[in-house]
Image 1 (cartoon, rainbow, N blue to C red):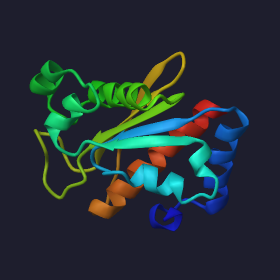
Image 2: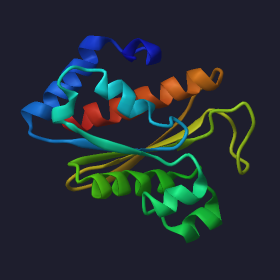
Image 3: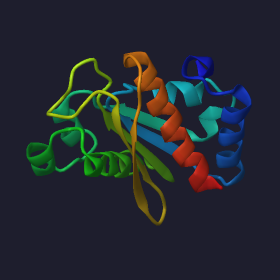
Image 4: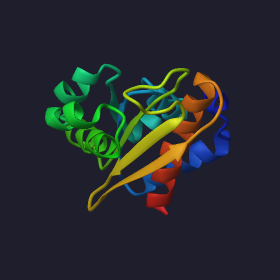
Length: 162
């Protein structure tokens, strides 16, 4: 699974190890990646000590119903919006009882969604004291965009962990 998104096994083991050393956990709320972040993390032996779980919220209504994203926000801006990623991250953290929450929304393509072009990805990270969002624009086909989104999410978490 790690090779699927182009991350070295050692990098993933290091990320899981840092979480374990800090006695911290992570959970996800994923739209365009449909659980791929969780799948990549749990491919690492020992990940069960730090991965609490994940929500696959591919359908827009589930972003609100399962992850707690504000329905008015979704109505006003659509599912691919930076604040949606932030709220997905907060929702993952709260619903799964984790130290860290990752929220991903974007357009894998090939067609635009709600006026947003393919390759646009918003990654939210909710931690004990802050919530951040990083927006990236990725090239390539659906698989390349989804793999890049996973890498961006795990990089955000790794940076936060130091």
